[in-house]
Amino acid sequence: MKNMFNMIVLIGSFAASYLFWEFVMGDPSGFADPLVRHEPNPENLLAVIYTGGPIVSILITCILVSLTFSLERLWSINKMKGNSNPEKFIKDVITDLTKDDLDSAIAKCDKQRGSVANVLRTSIERFKEVENDAEYTSEKKISEVQRAIDESMNLETPLLEKNLVMISTVASVAVLFGLLGTTVGMIRAFRALASSGTVSAQQLSLGISEALYNTAGGLIGAILSILAYNYFTTKVDNFVYMIDEAILSVTQIFTGRIKK
Image (cartoon, rainbow, N blue to C red):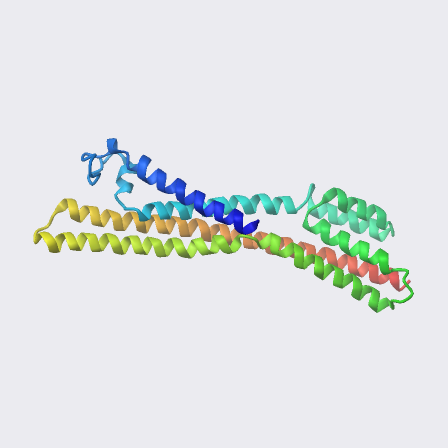
C-alpha cells in the first residue's frame, strides 16, 4: 500500500508537471514566435521559464513531490499524537497508574489513540497479564513488560519516519537535475556559438536561460526538501523522546508496584 501511494504521487506529479510545462508555460500566446516557442514575451514569466527546457518539468515534479510528502507527514504525525494533547494524556495515565487504576488508564489510551497511546496500552495490558502470574519472578515480569514495549515501539517508529527518505531523496535529486539542466543549457549556448561562427544573441540567451532557470529550479526543490526533512526529523525525534519518557515513568511505577 505504501509503495502504491508513493508510485501514484510520483507518476501523478510528473504528469501534472509536464502538462503544466507544455500547455501552460508553453502557451503559444506567450511567445513572439508561437510556432517554435523560442522567443518568450519578456512580461510573460511562465513563458520565459519554459525556455529552460523539458528538465523544468522534472524540477517542478521534485517540488510537487516534496510538498505532497511534507503535507502527508504533517497530517500523519499530528494524527499519531492522538485525539488530545499527548503531554496531558501522559500525565493523566500516570496519575491513574499511581492510583493503581489500570482499567481507567487503558480506557484513556483507547480514547486517546495514536502512537503514544498504543505503546502505553500495550505495556499496561502486558503488566496486567503477568502481575499475578506466579510463574514469573519480579524481574521477569518487568522484562516481559519491556519486551512488549519494544515490540510496540518497533511497530510505531517506522510509521513516524515513513516517507522521510523520499523527501531526503528529492533534496539530492533536485540538485542533480538542476545541474544537468545547467550543463545542457551551457552546451546549447556554446554549440550555437560554434555552429554559427558569430555571436547569435537569440541562441546564446536561450542556452544561458535554460542553464539559469534549471539551476534556480533545482535549488528551490532542494531547499524546500531539506527544510521539510530537518523539520520532520526534529519533530519525530522529539515525539519519540516524549514516548521514551512516558515509558520510563510507567516502568518505574510497575517496578514499585511489584516490589510492594
